[in-house]
Every structure is written in structure tokens, then in C-alpha cells.
Length: 440
Image (tube, rainbow, N blue to C red; front, side):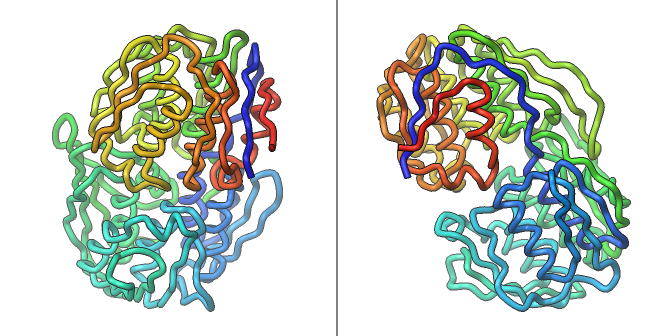
């Protein structure tokens, strides 16, 4: 059902950042295989994370939702995960499904994984390949996509693996399988990716080694046979969700937006660094830490933005934020060029094509490239007035609605239902800031 975002004269207010989705997935998984009972607070209760909680329960963990983002998880410990009675449905979640394949691979179980239409088009071969090298087996239709069936093994082989593309999901999948491998598993990255798996595993008592061999390359090693220990965990605020709120503040004609309790992690802050390069007025104040991550409050006010070529070394640290960066580029003066972002082709949608279509239908000049796009900024509010096809992609949907808050004419999207997968409070939070977003 279509939603329309109308231009408003001011956005102002403070929002507590929703729990980080990546950390929420991992907290449920790690608590679910740990010895003992873990208390988790601040969990993001979006559809993707809830599907991970359901999967862990189906595999033998005891999960209890306490309300307000608080959960209790009693792990399976040394007893291990067991075959689920029915298929595990991951909905729209690439993170949940790929990490879970690695987590389950080291147990003698059989599990069928399914997902929605969008997830069923996303490639799983990137994790199937290393897991098969380790000794897991898969049944699928040959395309390496969901639905598929995993046959795990209690005697996985350790491997030294170099992912073809920079991907925290692939790295994490291999490391989680390595927890139950017979020896040391290593993953070498030529470009750093988000390191939540490494940090949180340490919090659950796992020893792993991270060696930065040079300025960019790193090697992560994990010894098999380790048992996780239950801990109490607070989930930090999601920088990917915060990016939408900060962007709304940056393009607003007046006012200012504060986002509280945001995770500050150099493998996740590429959007904020890119926005600063474009002239964004963003402030930050240190708060402390949660789950091994630094926390900050962030403030943003309307800024005169300048187009820039986004450095390729920032790409892994902002891979989920390019749709909202494209919105900033549309408001900026001059040209913004994105390259080296091939991974966007295999997200919830083909995000390069979806971003280009989102801008064009709203009167912005943009050129599509195989690995990115080039935006000719409007030097102020873009024309707007378009209906954006979201392709069941929550980040395209939210980006288009943010654009509509400050464009010349309203911006509409064909569907908003999928926003609940990652940011269920998005509409309420935007309304509290003064946005005018209506369901047609």
C-alpha cells in the first residue's frame, strides 16, 4: 500500500536509536549455543531479528521475550543444536540466514531454510562454498539460493579462507563454523568489514586472534572446540538506522535532529564520514560502551552539501547506507560518484538499479554504473513528485520517504510493509520529529 512523504519546514527532536540489527542477530545466536542463561537488553524487535529468535528456539535454545527489547535465552551448551521439526523461515534476512548456516554447520543436524521472494533471489553460494570445503553438505536446486537443506557435521575440517568479496556475513559464517571445526580456521580479508562477530564472541568467552598484516589486510583465526559462556548483553544503537534520522536533519530547512546511543564503530561509520566530506554538520558526544562497542549521541542540522567522489575504502563501512547517501547527493551541489560497490547488486534488491530509479523518478539526474552511480546534485531540494518502486527493499523505502520531507513536491513509495524488518518504529520516530508521512 502506497505511502507519501510531504515536505515540511522543520524537523526537530531527539530519538533513541533502535537496537543494532547485526548485534541483535548475533546476541541471540551466541546466547543460544552458550552454557547458561543470558539476559539481553535493547534487542531490535524487527521481523528479521524475531525470525532469528524463532530459529534458535526451533534448534533447541529456550528464548523468552520479556518486553521492551529485553530477552532471556537459555543456551544449549555442550548438548548442541538439534534438527528443527520444520523449515526455518528467515523472511527477508540475509544476515540471519547466512550466519545461521555457519552456526549450524558444525552440528550433526539437518535443517531446511526458506525465505521470502526477495531473500530467495539472493546468492548463498558465497557461504555454501566454504562450508562445503569444511565438510557440510547441501541440497538445493543448483542455483545456490533458498530454499535449501543443510546437512551439518560434528567433525568439520578447519580451512584458511579468502572471501572473493568483502563481506562480514561470509567472514562470520566461516568463523562460526570454525567454532566446531577440528583445528584452527582462518579468514583473510583484503578490506576490513564490520567486526561485531569478533567482538561479541570475545564477550561470550571465545578466544580468537585478529592480525592486521598491513594497512588493510587482516587475518582472523579461531580454534575449534570452544564453548561459549552466557553473559548479560546490552545491544548498542544501530548506526544504519541512525543514518536515516541524521540525513533527515541534514536536509531539513530548519531545526535539528539528535540520535541517542548510537554505536560508534569504524567498520560501520562510513556514511557519517562520507557525509562529513560533503560538508555535513554532524556532532558527536561520547557516552560509554555496550557489548564491547563505543556509544555516542549524534546531532545533525541543515547543511549546505557539496558533491564528492566517495573513496572506495569507505564502501565496506557503509554498504547498507548508499540509498540514503544518494538522497544527500541529490540535495548537494555538484557531482557525487560512487564506485567499487558491486555488492549492492545482490542486496534486498539490486540497490544500484533501485537507487538510480528512485532518483530519476524524482527529477534527479543520475548515471548508473556496474559498480555504483553518479549523481548530479540539485544544489538544494530536488523536484520530487515521483512514485518510487521499492522492490521490497526497506532501505530504498526509508530513503525515499526521507527525501520527501525536504523535496519540492511529495515523494511516494509503493509499499512500506518491509520497513518493519529492520526499523519497526520508523514511522513513529519520523512523526515525532515533525515529518508528514501519510498512508494513501
